[in-house]
Length: 198
Image 1 (spheres, rainbow, N blue to C red):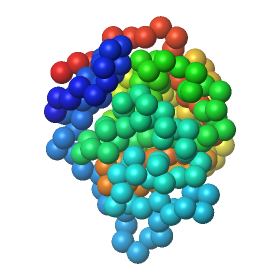
Image 2 (cartoon, rainbow, N blue to C red):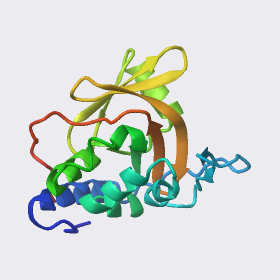
Image 3 (cartoon, one colour):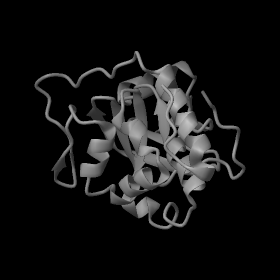
Image 4 (tube, one colour):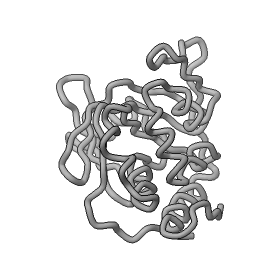
């Protein structure tokens, strides 16, 4: 699926996300189990029949992230048919990082928070076990996030800079993936890498 959403410098990011969508166009996220309660974020219900973008936009703890996704042009990917896992930093984690960036840098940062595929907590735990204690997840941006156990039950993520974030709220299911709420900002290494194109 080709789309060009971002003019100028951010065009590469749009093509990269479009390529990820094309690769996943036949994949669907598994529905949340019937009869289970939908999770709440700061008193707001997250709904499994909404898109990832819809749940992020409805979350009172993700207003900065929702605005950054829209400004960067990456939001459409999270509202489309591709399946993603979004590692969603809360507002306090993003307050000093994302708003100060230019559009191209912001698109790269937002794409780094997205991993193609459906990684709920069970899938992450399985990948960590199969990886001998860590799971290396390739982001839409092309970088790597490393998932490890932090204690007996908590999953922590390490970014390319060596910074670590804990998953604070697990398994916010959406019709096109799953959101894992993280307590700190995750970012790629400083030098931009070659972005994928269609």
